[in-house]
Image (spheres, rainbow, N blue to C red):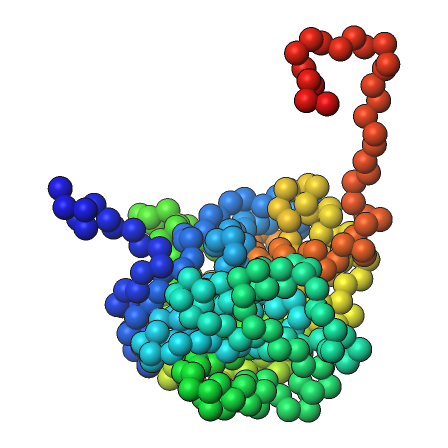
Length: 381
Ligand SMILES: Cc1ncc(COP(=O)(O)O)c(C=O)c1O
């Protein structure tokens, strides 16, 4: 048999893209998609304590979408990287916070496709001239050789992400490079296709043969907008027709209603963001800042269900959801809910100091001196 006939591996291949039939009126439709994610990601029952009466909770494990590219970003990158390659780019520029999961995932995807990667990372004024270290996402980014350029929060606020990426783009163009810019969080209309596709995936995961089986609600974190734009648009167009509840972890809901509207308009969707998604504030003390209650909640969830949430996105979204369930039980009672875990676990390493006092204790194992040594064991010492 010819070797080529045996090879039908999908991962890291570029394929022509055909949208679900219910999304075929959207425009523009991407021409290609790169297979980067390990999909379909599993869906399983999630027995969180203190759910309202007769509420069934399920979780879609997008945190298992792959290790180095894990989380929700990889779904957007499947479309964005295909575009970068189609445009003949030789390097990728993107931007985010110092522990950006999106920047880490983009850097890995770039390397898989043999492209260089430049990351503009936002940090505090006092740290902007210092070595950023190797905590969490930074270790992966630096290990795979992404070029990191630090900016202060003040510079970021003054100039904005578009100006900053354009500055870097101009510089690289002058050096003869062909850069492709991916916006914050991969959240443009092209990236939105990642979660339109996720709706098709969920549809295909549901038992077939009846329209009765399905989810009443989808709950997910919102940080830059395209995840909820894709989910809510896909859900409203498909048979799923599930209500999408977003918990925003930075900026406020009004900002995201407007931003998502821009993404929907960019696809000529002809729908209003207010009609298809419900956005609530779960920012708490601020982006990537956690209260002890939130971290305790993360611990309780891990102990009771084995699912480890990240502190910045899904942790705050789940915390917000449970709080809302306690305050408005009638809104959630008897519903069939799908929570989407969007990953970001490397962000936990940035919280080690704050978590130290919350986690399980350790003990030196008690071994009686009188226990005889068994021959042949432990000879290496
Ligand atoms: C782990 C994780 N979950 C959720 C989000 C939010 O998704 P989006 O940026 O599409 O709103 C992000 C990024 O912002 C993220 O890194």
